[in-house]
Image (cartoon, rainbow, N blue to C red; front, side, top):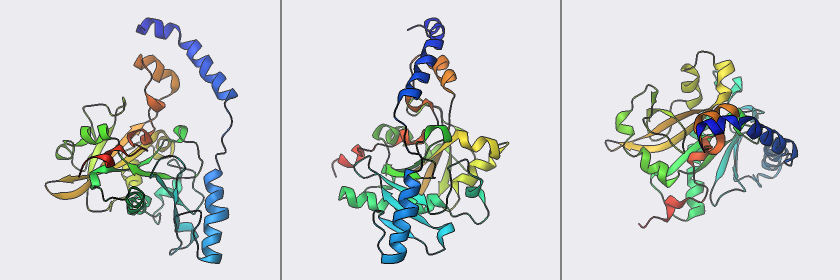
Length: 269
């Protein structure tokens, strides 16, 4: 399909998208919140049993706590979810001076992924992802903990040597989308990725919601660290007009860089 033909049919595309939005079954955006607030936390408090969550951490109080829940999607995907009511990446609560580093807590949950897979994996096989506000189905902040896509892992292999502590645009696309990246040193993410993103934006209060973040384990010169990736959500019309073919998720869906079948774990050795 030529670009001219695509642009000519743009109104029809938008009409189909609008029709799909009105006819698709509605999802409950509070489903995760109810699982956390009505089941996992009460069960932990009354019976010292986190079920149906895998774990509940209330050591610093419910406003600073978190749970880890096995997602229904994927062989080994888990979700790190705050026990406080936090909408998502656009919420000012994640930038508060006393806000927990939820990415650090999510990274600790990779051990649960390994347990589900019955094997130990290198840090480069793991990714943590949070989607942009308009690319998520739930209105409770949650970080996807799972394997990175095999193609994404291969594409990122030379990247750590090219990065430092400043955001730099990657020269290639990942899952058809543009990302920028920076290097985070350490065995665990000591710096808070939400704050690193906010510090780079002119107006975090209005811009954070358009961004997604993906933290991928990495090694540089024999030392552990992370590649932190930032992608931006694109309006539907812009995505159609600028791509010829439609990219997955229209951008802003960091989860697209993960593989919920965890094919990297199937490698020999």
